[in-house]
Length: 113
Image (cartoon, rainbow, N blue to C red; front, side, top):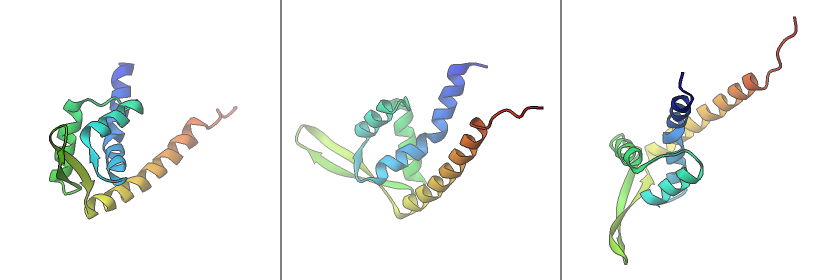
């Protein structure tokens, strides 16, 4: 098994959760999301982020608004919908359960026979 591929798959599994969390803090521009995800070593690229944002919007979990920019074209700022907030709350609960379960497994001492 390829280690790098396994690491990428683990990160992909939590990408949607992280994106929704970032947007839940308030209106956010895609490049700011990209910076935060990259700084957190989630390692996402524009080619991954924009289709995911479109899918989340089409699912009714987020929306966007255009804001005029003094330094160029208008910018698209993303916001969570009410459905998005509910979905994020459920994901948060699942994340906490998974985190507890994984921690229990990885910190469990081997049993002596």
